[in-house]
Length: 79
Image 1 (spheres, rainbow, N blue to C red):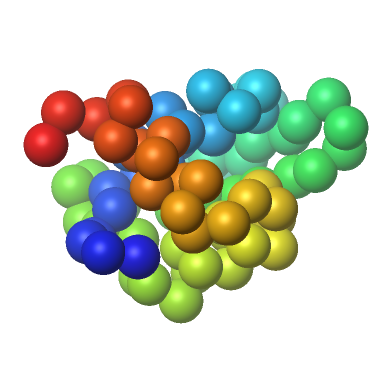
Image 2 (cartoon, rainbow, N blue to C red):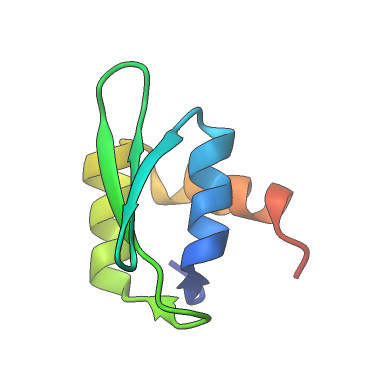
């Protein structure tokens, strides 16, 4: 990942991909996709998501490449 990504930016990408928020427990927002994939995103103000957690979410949970994620991020976020 080329830069740090904030939780709110990640959530915008998830929603663009069809994930729906199903609940919030404390600072963790839980999302589900209609195909059954589930993701939990920690939202701690404007603090960025760690690169290890972000890589895990993008590769294993969302199942898209880094390049696809970066392209979606560019489309949704004005730098």
